[in-house]
Length: 301
Image (cartoon, rainbow, N blue to C red; front, side, top):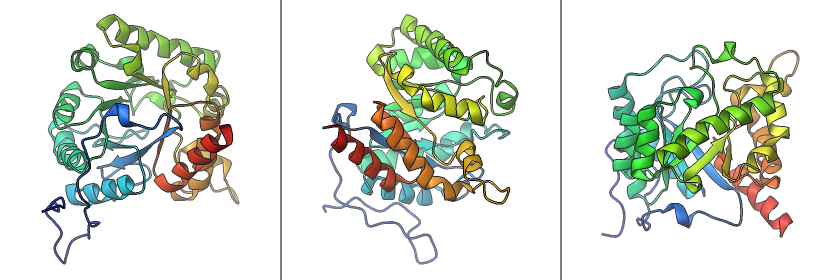
């Protein structure tokens, strides 16, 4: 049989899944494009994420959504089981793993390169066991030594995202003398902890953490200064997709644009940062952002 068996939940009363194609070879980090910015699709297996909470809150619907992103051209699928929006409640560890692990396993089996979005070393370890190749950690300055040691021991790729505090406190911690210089310095301080534990520079992916302990104006300053992050010498990931500062920019009659109305602005940010040499963008809507990075790559040749 030359097709991947469909996951459970495909009966007449369930959400239809896309037709599963012939399994592709197991993805490797080295197989990612090097001639353009890579596109990471966001897959939140949560009921409360700010943009798509509840849309993919079962394994079946999440796998279907991940496959659609994969077949639409996403280079990486980033699977998360805990909302990181401001004010979000912490999810128990076993519940986070119940949400993400079947999805990671199914997408890896389909040939996708998978990242796991988690703050917990235990969840990261199980996701790596299931075939994920990247750990995307929003802990920022509060990253635990257990996570650092895990990444070092496993040789995993690690997204070091700048953040202060947690989902309940980060909005109160956006006080900087100079947001660009301070975020750079704090990012380097965590980078040095990773290095000291034995994590190789080529395994570290730097994310300025737009929206995490930053207000709207500070996010724009970081976007404008993204080349400074590129100059650190690590791969740089930018995650602006549908975030509040874009909604505020697109305010009409005193009302900020809803998350789903921010995709064109997201693609504009993608084109801007791609032109400045970032390695990757993390987005909800894969197709227009893939188009944007392809246009930038062609224009730069």
